[in-house]
Image (cartoon, rainbow, N blue to C red):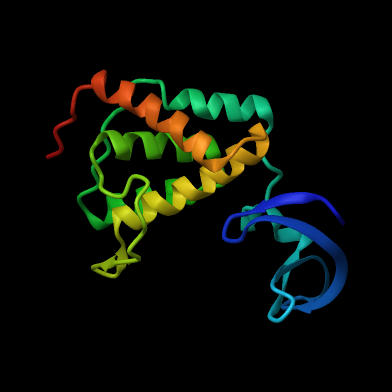
Length: 180
């Protein structure tokens, strides 16, 4: 209890308590996360045995944050999902708990010119799946929030660093792969 963790959906959370709760398989020890507001409190229970499956993890370290920011300086391979399967793969990478993989995917999408870089997500669904814009915006928000926390700076500062790096990356982008 008291530990700061990153929940894949809710972002930063503090473990409020550990309590036994009735779950599918009987009584289980669960981490308790309290979210919401004083008027509308939300209690989220996650069985201790399912923490890894759920994607709950500790925040990245400062060294990991530096490595993640370095990803945006590296040569990119434009990533342009065209089929439902490719879009689903990109979605899985952007929603991964591996922030290095999230950063690489963001870089490759941004260099490919995917709309939505630092724009408001429209939440649009295209053919019953999220648009590239919404996926990119949500992943960027998660990444900048965590990096800003770890680096003790603002989200705007982190976004500025990423934009600056991506500006350089666009000029030295890798050759485009022809998909058949």
